[in-house]
Length: 284
Length: 320
Image (cartoon, rainbow over all chains, first blue to last red; front, side):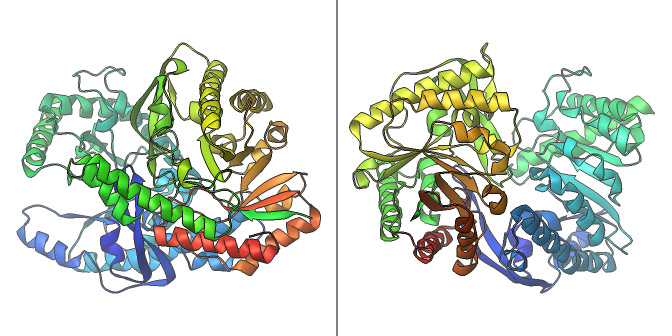
């Protein structure tokens, strides 16, 4: 989600690998000039998937804020490096970098996807709450990325302190938000607050952005445990009760399933569909 | 006349080769002896780079420290290691210590993690988390209050330091205190941390430094100036040097080289900022340092940052 998009960006260079924890690492690079998109990097895959899929396709893209936050800055900071106030200098440089990526990299990608028939995209911003004071910048960049484009937009944020998104999230011009919750929940059945500890955040959406569809993760993507449909039902039902409007709750995974085997991933997704169906039965 | 030197303030970047060696080791594809051999080879290079740059004290790279807290959390009684937590505002994570009971030292905490023998006598620099940073980044499941834990930690680490001091000629001991400046604390909190630091460093003869990073150093001033340390260091990617110059600090470390960005800064721009500081203040000693650990950079960039510090020290007029 980082290296692939930036392979298609001029004005960026990869520098080497850096540790994330223990022996986990990623190949990190720097913006060395104003970025330019070499070619839309999700288009071919979208067209292939669209030709095979029997339902609507949603295309995830890494957002401008995360691409910037996970990169070095050898271009924008130069203008401000002489300032006395280092926080102001970094903040100005970061703002320019993030908005430049939104306008010059992310928006052209989205436009090309929409022109090719995409109706639904997802913008992934896992980095956003690592610097809570930059949440408004992420929202501004998100809005810039989709400006003038007629498409349904999901924002995906995971493994984060979601309370930091509020109240700013109400300014985002999105239709849906997808968040990881199963990872922080218990595996017991039931609807009590103690058992459904991973889903308390739904109350915030009721208070600050009740019009938003919320897709709480009901499948933990970091374990081979196959969530039974009844557990998925209880997680969704609890979310609906906390939110106050069951029509706004969407069944979803915590995040991508890339770390699981195909067999495990398929079983999890089968149960996701069954659990969603059980929940719909409760409200029909 | 201010003496100016270069030093590092944290763990060094692991090379791609070493990161992949750790991966092979975790998967059981590389023997421990071979991993250790590779670590020591890399540590020697890091030590040589600092020596060639004329650094006053030398860190051994801390290449086996998966994070700043891990060797300590893994070797203290009353502390266990849990899942991942974010390391301040970085795209990097540490394993959270869980405090389950009274903190005690039983065996050596750091043997196996340090290589003082690779460094000339009197030059080795040891870096440890100060008590508040360790305790506040841990989860407390014990019956003890924070103040009690600060002192338990301080006492345990003091024993370790005295044992190390008996074996090695240590040049400098740095206590890293990001949690002291990440947020602003009540004066009472900062004062009790000062007492715990005094306990931790009791009987230590090496130069004692506290380094405050990932936050505005002004958050901890003036309280931290009363701490029983010789040197106070600041992360200048967060702290305004002009405002810092309002305080008289005899031995100061300026984290002026950005340890989290790959841009190799212009020597003259950074040197002029230090000149401006020296126009207002004349500390006895000024250390030029990176703003934080260099482990967030690819190793070739980290190497360049060492050379940059050497140039700044030479330009500002120190002994390098």
